[in-house]
Length: 538
Image (cartoon, rainbow, N blue to C red; front, side):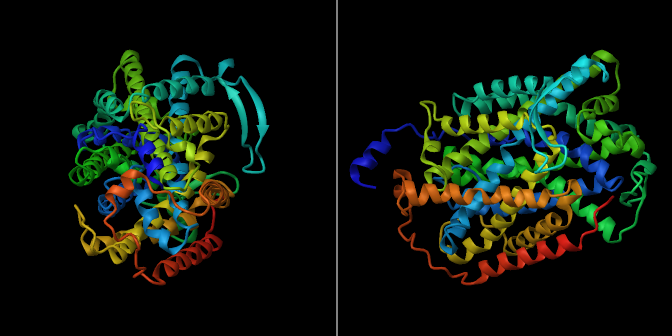
């Protein structure tokens, strides 16, 4: 970048350092509401081991967070979250490997906006209208997407219309920067996370945890006629378990979004690790207690209700746990709707910053690096909005969720391996937080375990889920090619902030050698073998 261009860039609006770790904690406080999006589906898929799945998944997520905290500390000048820091590790080993991490992270997080607002809209419809009301069946079909998944199409119905209103509301609230949005989320978080905590505590305090609702810990199996029974831990049972762990990870690992705001922390070296650890502890409480209380109260028969699977009946089911009449139920449902809007705001805050930093770093088109006078990445936010307005037209939100989850697990694997790659290639860099080596190795192993869940269990959620997710991940390749070779002529940009921060030895020696390539090859082979070996339920 020449001097005139650098001077011009310095005068442009940029992200502002005005956040503390407490702000980031509240900005990511919507993640626990993710339990509302997937809890019913996972309970329906696996049956009574569901509550164990959630406990194991959130503990795995917490261990992985220590790696994210270390690699985030290496780049206090960058925004965008863990995928951006992980991409920097992979860049010396292949230009086309690194952007996959960033793209997959965004493609996994952005659909939360459509999923959260549509589920909230579903709660509104369930509260206002009887299940057989004509308004629930009205729709206009726009496009058949059966080539992606049977029964999938784009349509307009009242759920998509209400959800669009919710999405536009949350979009408007974030135009004044992350600081004001975080303050709003603090108030919203205190109000709407309390019902989730209450749901988790009531059965424990009352002792209402029937053992026959929690045991035996055997997978739920369906035969060709649709009849359900307890199975065993054979290949079929383990495949279903892998599918459940795959689905749960989309929710439980999401608090890594707390490190999306490193570039906006007033003290990034101190605040980064505090933010992600505080968010992780909140998620441990919610993801442990709520699924346990949910299952213990409802029992297996109630969990098999189709409205539990798609999430539309989860709010009313949770309301029954705390008791009370119609007024209490309506208030409770309203608070859960706010909880969903909280995760939508968390998603928009985090995913827009991923797009922004990916543009600054040269992965995605230049226009995404524009910000407004308040320091909000508005170009990225508008892109997020447009993408999710299209997703709101999809007839099967769970299909969208699980396809995006394939992308999320790819990001997860690349980033957990980035921990040891950074340690080998940049071991001399200052680290505000240093993950214990044994924990770094354990988290890297979890990266392979998660990909095993994906390879064996992704198609439990529908035939072609793994294939479609891999195709979605590959969409970054032409996008990156356009940015790097057409817009930037094969040279990565260097922002003024980057130039000021760089420690002066950016010519990294690839000390990891062939090990990153071996990790990729081993992962690909494992996913393929497990995928062809899996036995899917009828």
